[in-house]
Amino acid sequence: MQSDLAAVGLTAAFAGALGREGISCNVVAGYHHDHLFVPWDRRWDAMVALRALSDA
Image (cartoon, rainbow, N blue to C red; front, side, top):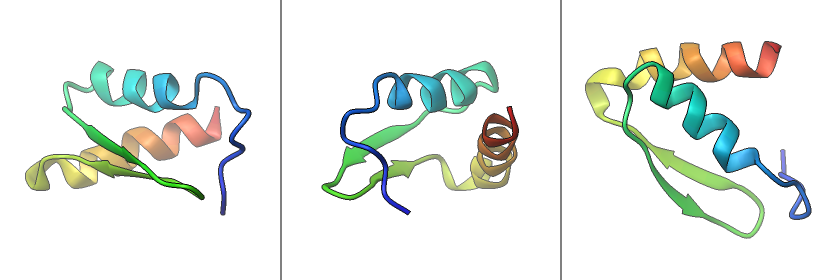
């Protein structure tokens, strides 16, 4: 899946979802999609938070 380059607020949305859970995140933006790096021991918590965001 590719994110729309014209989409505004995508990074803010997932950063907010992770931030509310106290999960730090580094982002590397790519041409077709972004890469999110979270602490290894919080990876499952991050997936739960991001899946909840996608259900909203």
